Image (cartoon, rainbow over all chains, first blue to last red; front, side, top):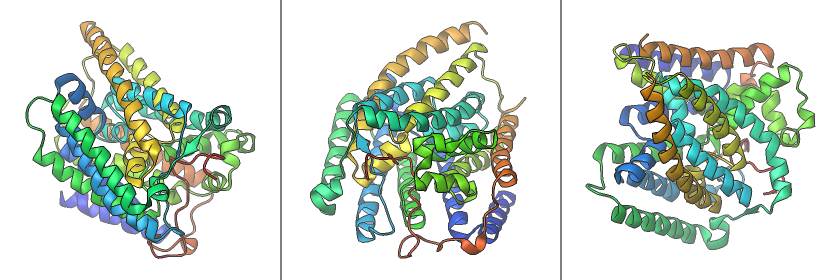
Length: 362
Length: 58
């Protein structure tokens, strides 16, 4: 453990000197989030699966607590510093809702959401490692489709803090989370609360708040993944000026500068590293390959690709849209939650059927 | 193969992403780094965020 801590300190200090203190802090936040998610078993796809399949709401309730605590913390500070801090505000649209549905379905097929796929890959999960490269490619392909989607259907951004003020927005957000908690508690069987998951929820909320203070914007995952592939495509001859998404000054700047200065890239790399640190000790005694037919890895790759495309069209994954969107007071976070959950209901059934067939062949 | 092999693959992937970007692109300049924290500084959010919707929220 001491070796791991020294390694992290060395990495963070090196980044602080060679790139900048803000970027080293963001990597540290990513490492801590990845470590916490892996060590505490906190996630999004898994808890939704347990709620749908086993009527176990413990993980879902912890998610609600994490989002609620983050909303209480970040909405006032974003409102206090509107020039330097921004929320994860995105439009609601038909394509956005449809994409969130596809994301919810896809994340059940590989049992990994946006953050979950990175954390699972970092902890050495073979299916997540298969899905991750295609997740990145899909995120890039999604950036090519977003402008068309925006032109095709009305996209309406709704910022609750602008509509109702910070107090009203926080009250509405907490009321919505409370109603969801009541519905989940009626549906679930057994205890609603899990001490370990609640501690993880509090840690995640604290780290998400620190992320806003340092980066000036809420935690996200998929933007960085698409950026990595865009940079790779550019080096292979792709012309970014042909893509409406990438000619926007913000994205053009991200393309022309190092990924070590890109917020979501740093936290996503940190998630992989943090999960690796948390899983390292016990990993030598666990098998790498899962006992499923080889074709299931192709299924994982396909749904990894869908995960990427859909998360861009939905303006974020479970982190950028669901977690940070709702916590910022964006209506699209709520639309994402409902569409993603219905997608997960289908995904849980489909995954069970395919998983059973994949295990029979082994 | 143990799961540790999978962790090594993930770490190689992460290092490869950074290494390729460093070698193919422009290395970062620490002298042009923004303030350590966006909160309370003149250098705020980059705006490169998952919720970015070109043309919809401008």
